[in-house]
Amino acid sequence: MTVESLSYAIDDQDRLIKVDEGYYLFAEENGWDEAGSSLGRSLWDFVAGNEMKKVQRLLLRRIRDDVREVELPFRCDGPDVRREMQIRIVSHSSGRTVLFAARLNSEERRNGSQPVLDPLAPRGDDALAMCGWCDRFEVNGEWVEVEEAAKRLELFRRNEMPELDHGICPVCSKLLLSA
Ligand SMILES: [Zn+2]
Image (cartoon, rainbow, N blue to C red):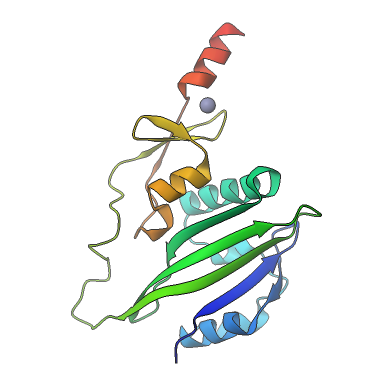
């Protein structure tokens, strides 16, 4: 059986406050036994890697404070499947609750002989330049907000988050120099 969609919500402290049936089914399908105790736990318990956490935290902040809604492609592979998914992340204007709704775009069985790292995933060889002042990222010479960078570089479809190279963008550099 394949789960086509799942959703969950976090409160203002990033704790899981609601998960739907699809969430539990998805967890079951992936042999993840702890799903039953998800409620009340921090979202960050489920995110691996410091760079990934950092980028996702920035994204959440942008969604809560500014853009309200973002839709992105992401990969969520299981033990023997490769999954391409789409996630919609929405923040309601009242309060800081954020809702995540994911749906499956495609799923492919992986047999044992195939490499775990997907050669078709966007490459993440180069470090990703990030401005430490405005939290924007450089994509092909242009400085853009995190949600735009995530879209253009397909950050959440990669096997690995690129390393973040902390620096300063031209706009902030100019502001600082003229201050
Ligand atoms: Zn900047």
